[in-house]
Image (tube, helix red, strand yellow):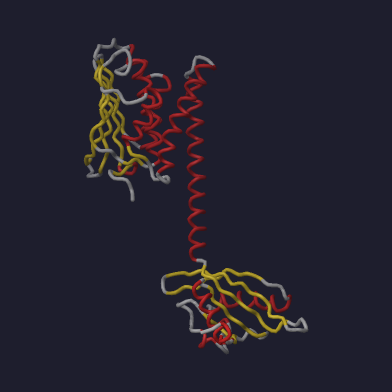
Amino acid sequence: MTMTSVNESDRLRFVLAGLRSAGVSMMYQDADLVIRFAANLPDSWPLGSLLEGGTDEAVFTAHHATKVIHAKRRVIESGEPTKLEIHRDTGHERHWYMLNIEPDVDMEGTVIGVFTTIIDIDDLKYRETVLKTLLRELSHRSKNLLAIIQSVASQTARHSQGLEDFLLAFRNRVQSMAQSQDLVTASDWRGAELFALTESQLHPLMGDLPSGFKMIGEDAYLFPNAALHLGLALHELTIDSLARGALGPAGGKIELSAEEHLNDEGASELILTWRETFARRQEEPEAASKSKSGFTGTVLGRIVPQALAAQVEHVIEPDHMIYQLTIPASQYELHAPG
């Protein structure tokens, strides 16, 4: 076929093929809104040939047909184009369409009909729904995070000896939360793995994990709330160990273990245990009183257990220290969500 042989029928066929490829449908109606032509309509719509001679009531439910007809009459009366989002339910599925309605004006300026191009916007509506959901979730999590920061600031100030002491401790604790938040954000807000969370908390304070630090058991996947609060607990445990425990003057080794078991009601729980074995015995009750008092004691004994609805046990003896949380299944999974 040469270009000189392309007739009007061929040209129309080419145009319709292009519109079909682009997912665009079209409809033409006269001034009485009688459908005179329809092409490339979505699969779930009536065939264009069956619509010719009918009205929008043959396409949409009564409620939606009224909206569409009203919009098209406004175009005919004003001569101004308009747009309208509309949906059609097919079985149990809902499909969204954008109707671009433009007037057909004759040589004398009289509106003699309307052109309607119909575009499937299911993907756009889906992304819009996802974005709104994410924004609501972001707002909720931001409020929770601000509440935690406010609590940390208040408790840190209460147990600080002065402004410099407060600024140093508060800055470190905010950095701890930032480390946990980075892991949660990197997972698209799903959470963080326990061992990665532990490394993220210890690394800023001491670099690579020492040879005497061991992690064993289940590398549980912690949901966002659990990851944020456990990150804070791990930070305080590390700070306390550097000051008084196995990472500091007492020497020795640390084992972080996580094991799942069933409680008396048959529900799954994660037993998370931080166990320090001292190389040098520590005097009681000084070590215990310092580790359980102040902000560290508040975080480990009250803030974290309450936030996770977890049971807590904190035992300090001259030759060892054990901090154990029994965490309900609502705060973790054994494998990262897909």
